[in-house]
Image 1 (cartoon, one colour):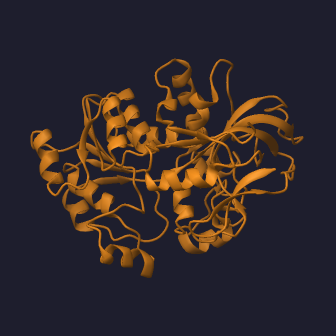
Image 2 (image 1 turned 120 degrees about the vertical axis):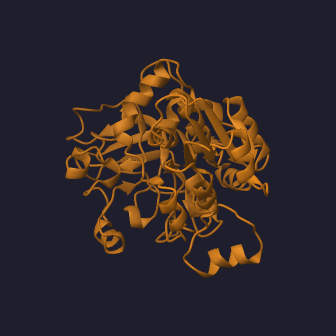
Image 3 (image 1 turned 90 degrees about the vertical axis):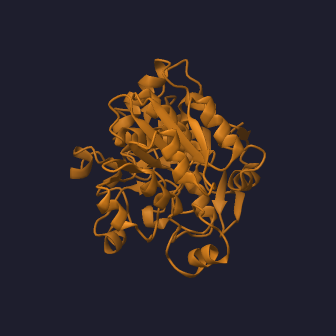
Length: 387
């Protein structure tokens, strides 16, 4: 089969790799009908994520048609079922899964013991996201092996297009949880740093949950335009008086909560110092996080949805002085699939609005570059591996 494979920093290739097979009794194999390139895939492309091996199959936003089911998953799935696959792999049985903390699954990551040496405990395996998260082949391919298929995938009802539901695999729940973390009760002002795909879906989710105002902050004109189309007010991130602008448009009160949807590759003042910090140390670039801390009103909430892998400098004095609450974590996907699918079915939201590019697998490497470089209005790429 064809698949998009990692071969080093900046080197993504479309190659022929072996077809997946049933390995464990709870596995399923799906024929991928639609997959997508995630912003966190760009961290892999950029060489920021350790323990990648040449030839690793990428991708963790995937859906398709079930073609084979292991004997212990047949009570949930059958050949022909159309499913969306969440990016985290969870057993459904360990204490974390029983508590609904699916992204902290204790069993699904074969590298969990090594991970625990670094962070204290294992967390869930992830499709296509390094051998630190299990070395699972990803879904930017014609076929995908899905472990614990009786727990992860959700069936898609007739009448919904792939484009409407594909983002249940990651970025719709991830953006929605950002809004949920803000504890919106109605009437709040929320700021969103970063108007990429997760930020866009966070904006829509804030309004779904009752926010009165959303202030979207970015530098890319197409992203800011999309945010305005969703009802947000916009501010350019690189303005020198960003904090003053936020205070002015909120009457001096500031946002009640801030969603940080940028992560480890945010940019600050620029220049050689910024580049050296990233390339010569294991410290990542927390500029958007720092600005989010500055922007949030005292007693407010910072919802972290951007990806960080290693260390960052933290403005702890400001966090404590302002009595801020910081909320983090990979999304507990299986908890959100059914309720968010219901919102799509009911017409409350159609996540397909973020799609700007549809390509084949062969076109995938160039689409990665276009997405990374934010060229030609590229905001979100979906791929059609089998046609």
